[in-house]
Length: 73
Length: 172
Figure (cartoon, each protein chain N blue to C red):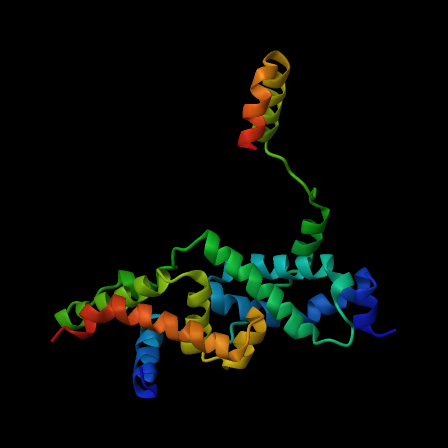
């Protein structure tokens, strides 16, 4: 593709997807950052805990499953 | 001690000053990639949060703005990868009454679909290079790749776009 064709493609792209230009930020984001800082750093979903508990229970009740569980980790 | 040195040492007040100085520039960069103001605001916060967490890795003699832009580009790329669908622009919906306008809208929609189907690492190069007309060296710095690597990605992206849009250009 030569420069002319590239310019033509760029023109078509800009018609379909107009440039954003220099949009201004509408508000101060510092309060959002403070909120993010105060969020707990690690959240483990409840179903992960359930899966862990089920795996642990299976390992205790059926030790022969341990190799299979390890294989799937 | 200057602001960047204090930031690198983990000073929260220094970070707040830098945050307020740079949030607008980070937002403007990210919104060009994700094309959605609300998402760009979230990613701006995420970018500056990632920067704060990585303060110890920042060298005070380095370019803070370029460093932020790189973190922001990575955050925006993560977003594009997790959410490949493109934002539908208003003129998709407002089809004109004449066949010419309808065909033009159809053609533009096809271009948007083709662009949205590109892998994120190629799409970002097309958006920043061809649509926003950012210099290749700036794009390269923000992606952590060389200018020639940007040209190579552009070449690949354009080849895919042309292939996808071939039937539109073949129309009478």
